[in-house]
Length: 223
Length: 242
Image 1 (cartoon, each protein chain N blue to C red):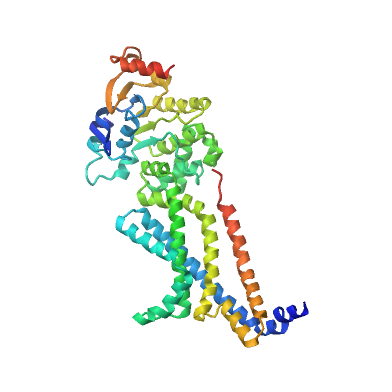
Image 2 (image 1 turned 45 degrees about the horizontal axis):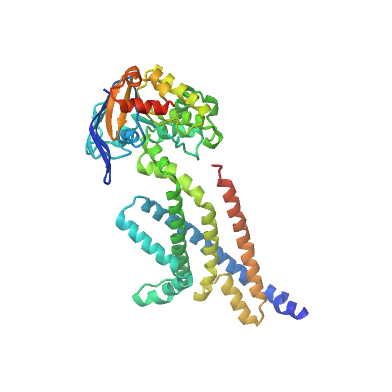
């Protein structure tokens, strides 16, 4: 037991590397917020574009979304960071991680928003159009408010799952929590920083989980 | 003439649902459309505001050819109120929000003005005190009356009812029919697709019997219900009234 504590709960090591972990937490927060904003906004934009049912555009959306959903996020990050420079596209590790995860969230949220749009009954469109609302007004003022409410539970789950993937940035040396924890581990030969990193993730993401639950109840309405 | 339909045809794929329908509706007239299911009654209504695109024929609303290329269909639609069988209220908006949405978005009225008009429309259907109730807090009859208020608020030239009481529990039908009767007395032009034969007898100016995509016969309620030319109509009315 003492050995376990010595190994995993080494206060000296933890105290020494806590500032680094904190630094990593800040980076994680920045990437996560940027991914959520870019991913959900672009996913919603694609779903709205898809609602116009332009055949070619929709085909393109479906293909892109399916590819992004099928690829592991880590593969996309590595492609962006290591492969794209060979064709002249350079990006920092931070940008590669942010862009990859944003695209993945875009793909999943597009599917979720689209499912929400399709789930709104046809009668809602007909009622709105019969009062003279245009297609866009109907989409914005009648269909999307209902669709977004339907999508909140799956969307929060998916968003949490994808933002946690900021840890993948460690692979391309983005200084987020996991990267800092691993470096601290290799410098100190003691895994306590990893535990500290895990705690940092919990502190960051448990409030997000609770926030998601709050949003779900806040926006639910009786049918 | 408020509504003038001539030679209207509509096909869904191979199936021809309307096979050349002519219909004229005068101001202040209440025209009742009856007929067996699948006879094209609802499709006729839905073509009149282009919720369905007609395959052939012409439709004029207040003299405007609504099938002409370049016609502002949204402007036409706000002159034609439509009430649906399933109400189709917006569940995320309260009664007043349902009634005022088009006033604010289509007519661009400021909120205060729209809400004033909305409250008046709700008062006309006897639901002034339900302005802040959401659809799920209202009975079916109340929901349908809100839907009527939503159409009324735009001050349409004509109101079309697509089986407005078919989704209602029997004890709630009366409240909706009363509102329709009051509208008629106030001079609203209406086309009603419905199976409420007693209401048709007492309130309709003219009854149209549709069968297999055509108007088989039309006339005053007394004539059509009591002395129809076609035995087919007598059978149908007997079957509806048990």
